[in-house]
Length: 218
Image 1 (tube, rainbow, N blue to C red):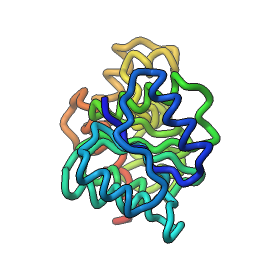
Image 2: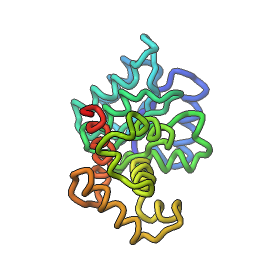
Image 3: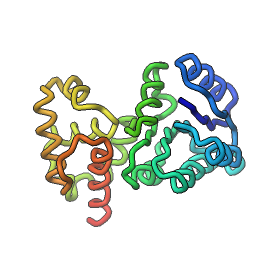
Image 4: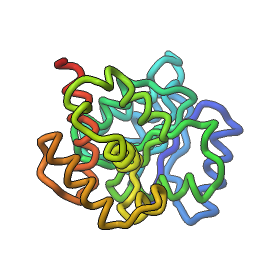
């Protein structure tokens, strides 16, 4: 699996390279600025990109803008954002096309190599890997308005775990319920948000987007 890494801090960039190589990933490129990231994503066509939000030369949203542009050129390009902060607008934009293959992790909440490499593999396979705090912030906006108000407390818990990229089995373990119960909650969520029931990862992302779009219209 070929990975492009974009991180301006040398120690963190080098650490990511060494860790991913130790877990069998091939590093196609490791860059420290926006223009080099754009070039690498266009020319090397990696299986997944691990991208910091703020890169030179602007140190604003350079990294994420490059990743979003690359996804416009190559729909579904897997992108895992690794950031210090939750940039709600961009987290939502990454999810917006519904194609999956997206992740958003907070640097200070990545606690071990297996957790991180599992997220990289999940995103590369077309799934999602969202930090719970990112999901909480996305879902906190006007959370009492329709359609979120239609969901029960348990359904909200299931939806948040779905958006993190958890499988039904993992959700069942987390909530100490049966997989059958999780499947029922999932079906209810899709129904209340106007989405046909499905186990597809992209459909799970659309469940979060349905809430966000509904909040904006409220």
